[in-house]
Structure formats: structure tokens, C-alpha cells
Length: 309
Picture (tube, rainbow, N blue to C red):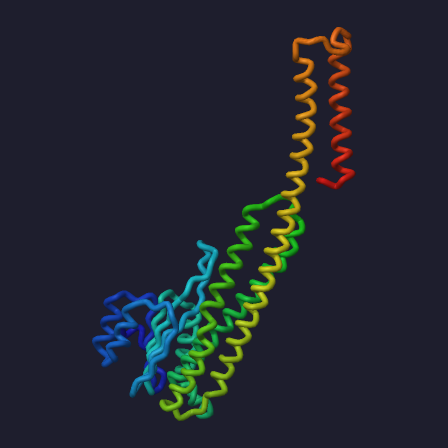
């Protein structure tokens, strides 16, 4: 546990990434936590929440984490407990961004703190820094997301056949956009409540930082809405092109069916045991084949003229 503790002036920061049950129980044992907080720490939660107690603030917030094997985003739950001089962060999956923040603090600890930046040595600011970095990462993902959609939109017009893998890619993008919106949407309200809840714990006026987070949340949700519109547009274009190709294929099959029916009818007539014109002619077979081909060409011409395929 000691290796997870970072001392920043009078502040203590414990961070656990993908913790074992015994590590969580160790925290609960050493800290006098509310029983509801203990329960939330031990059990996973699918919803964001914030609870305010006499001496601390407990927060559950989720961030997206991309799973390259599954080609989709998963929800990375983060539990945060804020005291006046203590902060505990617990993430379901490893998060490089939090480790980078801790490394930055470790480097700054070796140097003397600027008195004008004393507000940075507070759990309130540490939490802001974590959320801010996470949002910046999401904005980069969304930028890449839009670039991928632009490439997909170019490819959709180059398809002259129904591509199942291409359709799968579109559906995966749509699912990821929905998941991102599901994760981020509740955080608008959470940030407002967090700003109110922490105002009684810290003397520094850091409202401007959380207003910045609220702006980034709005920006993320706006970009996600644009992505939704783009995906719906691409899906509609793909479906339209697919329907046109299907109609064309049905038209071709119809023409082939008519041609085969004509040929079958002529063959069936000459198969019967009755007297028929030219049946004793040495060139009867050649005439029949040529006649069938001519009728096939006429059928294709008529269908083409009527624009039935």
C-alpha cells in the first residue's frame, strides 16, 4: 500500500489501478469510511454518482477506455474519495494518464513550489487535473473518430458490391458513438454537483477550472452528436446503394428467368412426339439455337428500354 501513496506537501494521494479485493478491504479497514462508501468501493457501479459527507466527498465517475481486441470502448469506473488533505483514486482498468500526473507531481516535489501555485497542492486540483486530462484524451479520440468517418464516407461510394465487413465497421462505429454519449452525458450534472460539494472543503477559488471542465463536457457531447449524424448519413447512403444494387441484381435475374423460360418452352415443344415445321431439316438445330439467341437479345433490349434493370 505504501508504494501507492504519493506525498505532495501536506496532501496524501493514494491511487489503485485494477485493485484486488484484499487491497480494497485494506483501505476500508484503515480509514473510517461511511458504510455506503465501503459498499460502493467493493461493488462495481454502472452509474455516476456523488455523495457528500461531513468530512469527505465520494465520487463515482466513468471514462471510456478503448479495447483494441474488441474494437470498442469499455467503461472504466473511477472511485474518488476527497478529504481536505487526502485523496484516494481507484480505477477499474490501468490508466496511463493518471500515472503521468503522479510522475509530474513527483518531479515538481523535487523542486520548490511557487507560492502562487499553492492551490495545486490540493485534492480538489488533483481531481480537476485527472478529469481534464481524461477529457483531452477523449477529444483526441473524437478527432480521430471523425477522420475515420470521412474515410469511410469516401469508401462507401467506391463499393460496387455488398461488403459485410464494411457494414460491420459502420455498426461498430455507431455502437462506440452511443457508448461514448452514454458515458459522458451524466457528467454534466456530476460536475455541477462536485463544484458545489467541494466549495466547503477548500479555501482556494478553483471554480474557473471546473467551469473549463463543463465547457469540455459540452464540447465532447456536441462532437458526439455530430458523429451520430455522420454515421446515420453514411448508413443511409450505404443502405440506399445496397438497395439499388439489390434491385439491379433482381432485374438481371428476372431477365435470365424470362430468357430461360423462352428457351425451355421452345425445347419442350420440339421434344414432343408430333410433326413440327423444319424438324427434318438438317439445319433445324442451328435455326433453333439462333432463334433462341435472337429472342434472348430481344428480351434484354426490351428490359433495357423499359429500364427494368
